[in-house]
Image 1: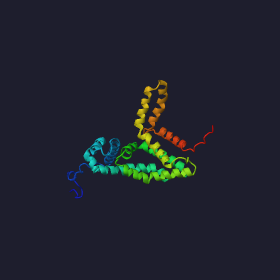
Image 2: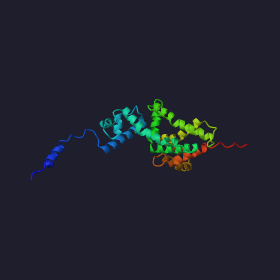
Image 3: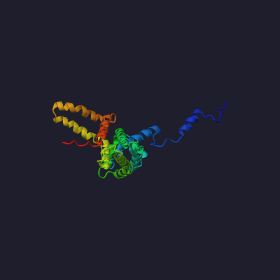
Image 4: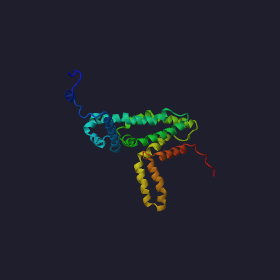
Length: 260
């Protein structure tokens, strides 16, 4: 019996498969590509926070991500395109999470501000690259993202925060003898500074023990160690609770001064 024409013999199948065009050089598989691309973004964020965008080369990013420079260029044609991708895929989602309480306010302006502070701190704890990037590229003079981030903050976060603060003051929910702008700056500082300056205050705190009497050093080590653990992404609860307590206390109406 002859073999039907529509059936391919093994030898013919092997020959046909070998004739298929090879996969494009350097093109990663779908699942591996997603992982490598994410590693490149992670590496870029880490290096941008450490050395700055201007001082970070694409080769250094590839080395940190453990890929070849050619693969990096496959995903990102230039450093500018890499920065634009980070702004779109990392910074924008971060801001969206932090902004959610301001976009969907609670009936109480004060409660909304407190919720914003808590959500923003949890967001920072989950994304430790953000405060480092802000310090290096936004708050520092000449930072390459300063103009864009400053404009975005001025158009989104600042107006909503100030409106909530003024509303809370008018409703008698928080003290009205303080400048609303300064209250806003203080709230952002309370949320960001402990994470951004963690290496500095941890080191400074550790050096305090050198000249202290033994009994005082023992009394301070436990709470300081707990505060250090609170800035790790695995357990920021202590730091968040501490900050929310400060929020609750500092905005209470000033008590009447006692007469002497």
